[in-house]
Amino acid sequence: MRRDNVIVVGAGPTGLVTALGLARAGVEVTVLESDPAIVDSPRAVVYHWAVLDGLDRVGILEEAIRTGFANPELCIVVLKTGEKIRLNINALAGEVTHPYQVHLGQDKLAEIAVAHLLRSPHARVRWSTRVVGLRQDGAGVSVSVVSPAGPERLEAGWVIGADGGHSTVRQLLGLRMDGMTWPERFVATNIRYDFARYGYAPANVVIDAPYGAIVAKIDHAGLWRCTYCEADSLPEETILERMPAYFQAALPGEKRYELVRYSPYRMHQRCVDRMRVGRVVLAGDAAHITNPTGGLGLTSGLYDAYVLHEALAAVIHGEADEGVLDRYSEERRRAFLEHASPEASNFKRMVYHAKSDEELQAQLEGFRAAARDQSLQRLIFLTAKKLETPSLIGRPAR
Image 1 (cartoon, rainbow, N blue to C red):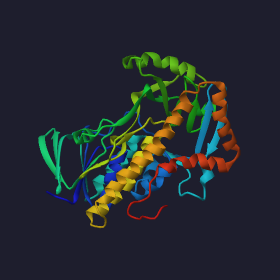
Image 2: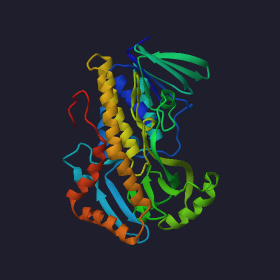
Image 3: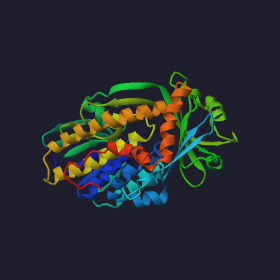
Image 4: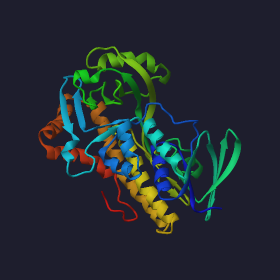
């Protein structure tokens, strides 16, 4: 059985960036994806400034910015009063390499990453290939898959499970996701509506109970993401019947909009008790999952990818001991449990669940103060950096 190749299960941002980092390090890598193509349903759309260095290191940041756009602005919108509190990531200028966030649909980032992988002599991507079994020993991992060609067994030195919250790899390892599930669901919508006409920035946090939302511009053709919250006890099959009432209450001006796509999903705060089992390692939502308010789930997954691809490449090249992967598990779990999960939970409560005007005003006063003081803005924007953990092989920080 081979020891020097890697199978990555899952063609989302975490899996693809991990694979791309491995391929650039000269490791033979195969990405397996159960879907027939990149999924284009509404998912992540904004990439924090803090993850852009990592995208640059794997060679896709420049193309991501060309395909989407860079934006330094964030606006806190109080729906009931129309108040808008404007913050700007330029507060970090001179201190960080990329003082802006990038707006780009997750499917578009995946397309860029796949194109780069297919140009690499060390990588390939297999679609419609579903993992159904894993068996490992000290020499490697045997992966049973089913594809249109029928059942097959693949062999690799290592397997990375980056196949999302319903991870087959995690289930085959017998790992549980301990934590909690919120009593609400999110509804992510892609709509055509002129938010900019009403003073919205390209990225907005709309604070209101019960009509709070995250509103972000997706492209320059009038497409915006609006993600709102509703009780999970409401029937999922009648979301479209309730949606017009939400937009009637939440849109800032004219109530006419065009719904392009929508996607409902449940929200959790969960994490496995370990991210490595022998020669199988988990990353992203397969290992830990958070409600996406503030984009900290995507940020956590990308930080997993950055640490993991260089650590595993070093192990394969004989430059590091396998124990570095246990440290990966420990450090990435700690970052999630101590920072990503509680920060995302607090952010969700602030946006969607202010219990009184007094509580809301206390929350807003911090943002108002930050709008007047760049040093306070710095502290707000540096929050995403807390999710990062240092390189495990001594790469200098950027």
